[in-house]
Length: 511
Image 1 (cartoon, rainbow, N blue to C red):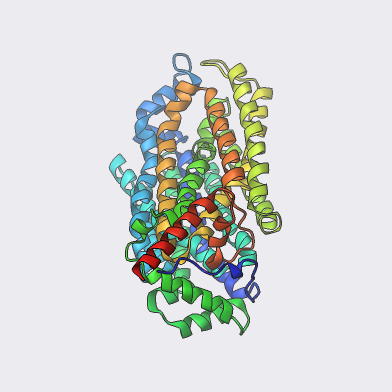
Image 2 (image 1 turned 90 degrees about the vertical axis):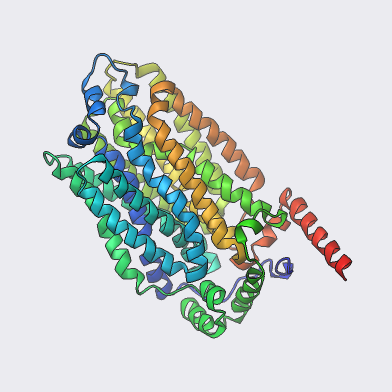
C-alpha cells in the first residue's frame, strides 16, 4: 500500500488563479451556511417570544412573569425548551454519518441537494406547528438537512478553491453562517411585534427561503474534480473541470496529485476503520479536538440564547432581540477580518490572538455578573451595557478565529481517502457537543450563575495552548500534499514516521 505523496512536493503551489466560475459556485454552495446560521439564530429569538412560550412552554412563561420568587438565572430553565434547540443537533449528528457515504459514493453536490430537501420540509412543519410534536419533528428534519450540508459544503469549498486562497474561500462558509444568524435576529426583531402566533410562525417558516435558493442553485453547481476522479475515475472530465475552475490550461501537476490521492483512496474499503490507524492519528485528533473546543468556547451560549441572556441581565424583549442582531453584525464584520488575514498571517496567529481576546472578555463578564447580577435584583444600566459591550468584544474575537477556523482546519487536513469520513467525524463531534451545550446551558446558567463564564474561559486557555503546541501551520499547503506538515511537526512526526517505518518493515518481510 502507498503511504503518502513525496516530500518533494513540500513548497509547491499549483498553477491557476481565482476564477469567476469558482467564486459563483462557492457563493451558491455557501448558501448552506445561511441556512445553518438562520436556524441557530431563530431558536434563541422565538424562545424569548411570549406568544411562543405561552403556546408550547407555559411553565417557562409563568416563571418568566414571576419576578419575585425565581432567580434571574433560572427563569428559562426548562429541559423541554432546550430540547427544542438541541433536537436540531441530535438529528444532525446522526445524519452526517450517513452523509459521509452519500458524499463519497454520489458526490458533494448530491449531499447538498438531499440536505436542501430536508430543510424545505422541516421549515414548513415548524411554521405550521400545532403542537410540540410537530415543532420538534420540524426541528429534526432541519437537523437532517444540516447533517448533509455541513458535511459536504466545507469539503466542496476546500476542493474548489486554489490552495493559496483556500482559507479565504472556506472562511466564506462561516461568513454566510453569520449572515444567516443576522437575518434570523432581524426577522425575530420584526416578528416579535406581531401579536398572537403569526410572529413566531413567520420566523420559523422563513428558513425555507435560503433552502429554496440553494435547492435551485444546487442543480447548476459543478462537481469538484476530486469527486469526479473518486467516483468515476474519469480523468478527462476531471481535467476539463480543473482547467475551467483554475482558469489555465496547464493543470497536469495538480491533476497528477489528485489521481495519486485517488489511487490511495481506492485501496480503502472502510475509511471509518482506516482513520483509526496510527498513520492518520493527527487528523483524527484534530477532527475531534477542533469541533469540541469550538463548542466549549461558549459561543453557542451567545448564538442560541443571546436574547434570553440579555433578558437575564435586565434588557426588555425588543432590546434583547436587537442586541442579538448587533452580535450578528459584529460576527460578520470580524469574519471579513479573518478572510483577509488567514492566508497572509496563517491560521495559528488568529487562534492565538482570538483566544486571548475571548479569555479577557469572558473573565470580565463573569466578574461583573458575580458582583451585580443577583437572583432577584434589577441590574443597573451601566453594568448591563458593560456586559453587552464585552459580549461584543468576545464575539469579534471568536468571529476572526475559532468561528471560521473551526470549519477551515478540518476541511483541509484530510487526505482524499479519508476526507469524507474525517469530515463526518468532525461534524458529528460538533453536533454532539453543540447538543450537550444547548441542552444543558439553561440549567448551567441556573446553577453556575456567573461562574459559567469562568468555566468557558478555562476551556479557552486549554484550547489556545493546544493549538499553539499541536496544530501545524497549513497556510498555502495544497490539500493533496498536506501529509507533509505532520511529518515535520515536533510532536506528530514521531507518530507518523514510526507508522511509516512499521509499514516498510512489513513490506521487507513480505518480500
